[in-house]
Length: 433
Image (cartoon, one colour):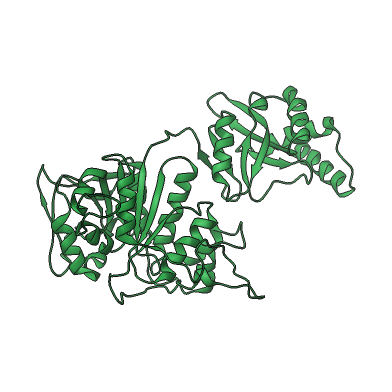
């Protein structure tokens, strides 16, 4: 009988809406309270449409955060009427209370603004309506300075790794100093330019490798993404560097960025070839620093998280290292032994199959997104797994989600095989918990 009465209350509300009649605040109290009973896991209600929004980042206002019974609802409704006409509800199991709040909505590509507002209003979470998930906001903000080194333009896991760094930037979890593209070709750097602009960081510098591997294998040909046009011939995605512009030489950007940072402050997330890193290590003094590349790395870099290596029972080549074997061997030879390399081997990402149909479905909240465009118009069902994001997550989150191997040394063979020998004075590699 209780459920029937609640349903009648909601039907009355919808009937009034269809008749274009504004509900009184007393009627709204009954409707919202009924929704609290009907949706014990929580809800968000648009008072204009009397429907739950299908998308948006929802954050509660501090002024109404202690409203937890029917008597408090008039004040919540009054506040919502004066602001965005959104009311939310959620059940606190620890206190056995159902809270009601006046709510503010942000677009789903505005996480930074939503998190900032949540912190200002002492809210612990941001609710993502399209995903029905909560994002915590009471995490520790870090002074983490990251350089991403990627081989953008082939596997799509690079796209997701960079996307995650933007989101970490939104949440003040790290500062992305720059992006190195170690796959030659301006189009590959222009992809990063598109993503920089799409996610609201157009000024992040991009370095492009010009002396790397001439023709590495391309798994997914999304290098045309920056030049996508609408039916009327207009660019679909914004860029900062035009068709006739250029990107800085990758190892030079490395030298510039490292020289500008405090000692032992930079974390490198390497998720592609090590061509640019190898050239950095072999570089000499220049206008950015009087130090050699090895000494500059030794002074400025704290650690490097590298997507690479195969450490299972089988001895087999690692793709990234083998594809640029001469550069890789030089990297292993010159990298300062006192700076940790935390390897994220292929075995960590192998089980993470993010299917194309799932990617597109997860982005149904928007019609225009560079990653969604890639999956809509290209064949991305090529066996690619989410290898690269693992090194990025490990770099930002530390070891909370992973466990490390014993420390040891990794030797790279001329065939691109990674041989691990345990040694308490050596380096760790990661495996999934």
